[in-house]
Length: 324
Image 1 (cartoon, helix red, strand yellow):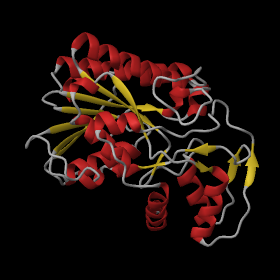
Image 2: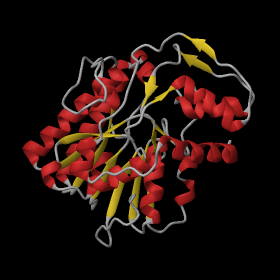
Image 3: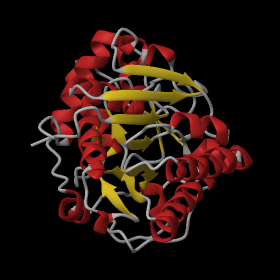
Image 4: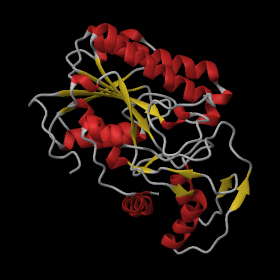
């Protein structure tokens, strides 16, 4: 069913933080296309202005250049807001290992500022980005909420802390919070550049330019790759979820499992290129296998993802061919 049929109050105002990023910009686009109002907040440290420039002529859109590490900025951004979709964070497990203090300030304190501003300004629902990295070294598949292991990176720790703070804000202050444990999201506008780029856009860009990608590890690691449309659906359904489901975190994925080497081979075939991968060392802090049990999100949020990996990868390939 997706999300396009969902109904919000006529003049609903959504605040999307991290709006110039990959997930944030897609959320802005979806909400504006549904006819609702969007206030975007981003400091453009990792997001890109070009991701949101297309909305500038839309009277329902406004942009604030600001940093969630500043409480006053968060307070101003939450003024009159019905729903917060808090996507602002620095991603990347390896980068967090290089920069633990920054990750703490940005991902934990920044989220706490947003929670506090949302509480003080009377926001109805606070939906925030968590991550499958919170499962750490817990070996069982599929990953199920409530069965987490030892954390493997500062990034994972920041997301676990965000979940605990959000749970407290629901319990102590009655702010309805919903954590989105994303599993390897991919799709249009995901950045293919830089040392910490996600694997699918990076592979696509390299293959399209005739470069041979490097697989970290043996290629036998598996991921529950999740197309961006499923993530939009989850965020918007969380905004309509009952208060009984608040204070919880939910696996947001398709519930499938793809091996990296199969993805490499599938992309070469789809692009009509003939190449063998190079192999590099395992990435520090990486989880070897991930696959999500999404039954809790189905039950409590009505989440029912439409896009399988195969559906999504076709659309992603088409987008990168047209836009790189």
